[in-house]
Length: 158
Length: 158
DNA sequence: CTCATGTCAGCAACACTGACATTT
DNA sequence: CAAATGTCAGTGCTGCTGACATGA
Image (cartoon, rainbow over the protein chains, first blue to last red):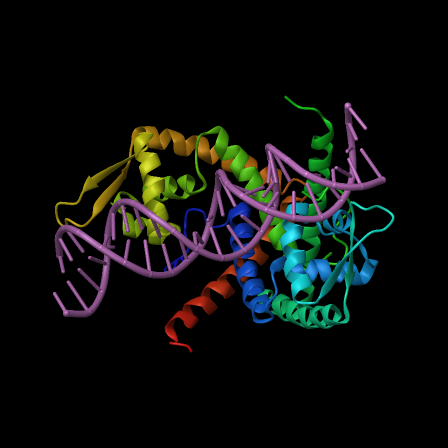
């Protein structure tokens, strides 16, 4: 880490600020989730399963924005911990139907508490109104870029 | 990438929003810098050298918030491209004095233009006032966490 | 044949760690 | 001796690519 004064030059470049803040956020998440033996993706996966019910890995990946290949490892771990069950789909034998177990529900609740704590840690110096503000601004940025990206995906570019 | 709808569950968690935005920022930087055959650290290094003059690698690393080990590779590339010169320090023979070359100045100017473009891309949907707002909020977060971290470094914890 | 699904191996970028030789 | 400097090898995480076998 940079122990001394700020990087001066780079100072207030938004791209830099965002990346740096993300670094701290990641550290908080790693620390918090680590205590619960959870990986970064677990929260998204478990929460999606609870909110939308059992589904195939492919659907799950699309919903959570997790690559199918990465999902495999995540589900392996979650299944081994008993938080999730993978059952072959009789209707379409390519598919695994992923289901949240009671233990998974428990873990999800713990993760939710942890996530709340992390937000509070991350945003500690900001007032409630400022937190709202920041959230709104970031949501707008993300919407913009997600959109731009999907339009790009359609044009068969050089 | 997540081609479909937003991850719903995670939706508006600041920690998630920040990480995602950082991802887009990183992509913009990679793309922009890639066109100039530059790596992520190059801008910080060159700008620091111009603004603060020649200095040892250790100083440079501290100023830019770059690990000394990573700096080695960065400087290797920059030196090979002729953007920087490494000369042994006569006064302290452990040290290399790193100097910005004229070619390096040119590259820095190109990078600065690119950086400006990237900010504009990243913040496209926001008004000038909103960009200011976002910047202020992020700066405050970073100040807070940098501080917290350095206090932690002092306490010899369990 | 094609497409989707699940699995695996591996890569690049980044921040970071540990070890080491040299010099102060 | 302890501490700083520069170098190198290597790690862990993340998002992603490519290949592959199986089945729809």
